[in-house]
Image (cartoon, rainbow, N blue to C red; front, side):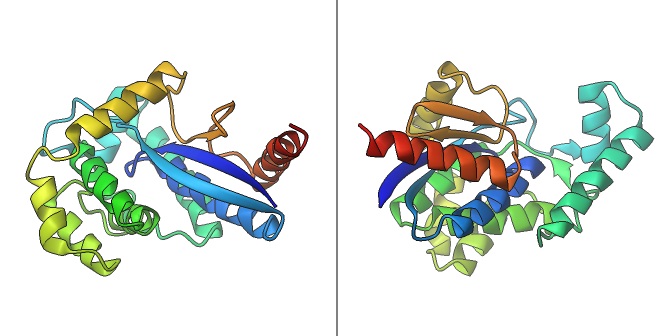
Length: 217
């Protein structure tokens, strides 16, 4: 069985990242027994300059895209509908605030050393889009870490410190230099970049292509 590494560049504050991961899950279900995938999450901050208190999501999106509130709300409801079809909980999406996620990425880096990064990623997607919680709040990080079987005290301590800051910044810089300017971004075996939450069949075809190339090397 051919092995393919996927670096998934993502932010827990990105709705399309949650959707993109779910589509990747569907692709991997299709490829079960055919391709062995190593998934590695990589950090990206949509709102790097956001102050700690954040701002209401519609207000933020209107300012960012220069659109009126009604247009942005409709856009968000369309995203929520896509998420719902995939079984994702986006019920709190309109109540959430735009937040900086640096603390979340640092805790996620630690979770990766415990082989629980995917579980924590999904719990933070649920916290942010389903429950409208701040995914970088140390108390939320503690709560979600405990939910996935990690040590809550350690998660909170990391969130309140600068631990893993250099690791996260280095990873962000690496993938920006590799051409990632938006998320989600799927880098297959360090060779191919797939941008956006592509349909499941696109991911299936791309993974099969890379696996076939690997087999012919």
